[in-house]
Length: 265
Ligand SMILES: C[S@@+](CC[C@H](N)C(=O)[O-])C[C@H]1O[C@@H](n2cnc3c(N)ncnc32)[C@H](O)[C@@H]1O
Image 1 (cartoon, rainbow, N blue to C red):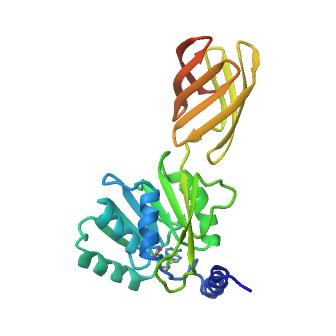
Image 2 (tube, protein in one colour):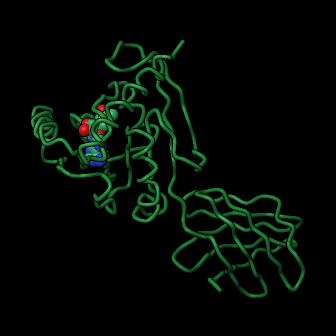
């Protein structure tokens, strides 16, 4: 028997495929239950200084809740002009029209650079197309929360499954949400003092190999969270921050601590 989510997904895919035939790259309009909206925003740590973008913003509920309940500012991008008009009206009624805006447009061409939090409830075929754009345009440390669907090939930083207390159209008994912290781009070769590192990266997952003083480093643990980079091995530990072309931090080794700056080779 199909689970409610599978049935909804199949229905959504059929609708999306039908819409794709007339040239649009669309996912259908199904709203996120309010209790899940609130959890998605709390899950991403949304605060007053955040700029929240909902990609495929439907009736505007996520951006409106971000302003009303979390004090943030935000922008919804929505392809359907009627839903954009409805969202503006909903924002006015909620008393947050001065803090949020809604733009008619395609998420695949929207400018994401202002966003510190991005929320997404779209079908996987659109999420796949958005992934490279999210990495390219969002700054390290930005948070992405997806509802129901994960990113292809990226490991989420956190996930949560919540039971839905109230019945909601197009929704089963549970919702799954995923948090993704945009990592700094550290893939490549780095050098500082007599240290040489090569970093392999897939989203926030990293593997580091290298040498110090001409001797190979056995790195046992390596972690990247936004711009915070740490790694350690036998007798040493590094903690620092990755910026554009530089990794700056402190190296503890042999009972002493000293700064270590790595630049791209
Ligand atoms: C599943 S609904 C989610 C609505 C809202 N974000 C929420 O969670 O309640 C997806 C929305 O994305 C819109 N949409 C689909 N494809 C889009 C695209 N390529 N660009 C912008 N909006 C799109 C649909 O019109 C629909 O309103």
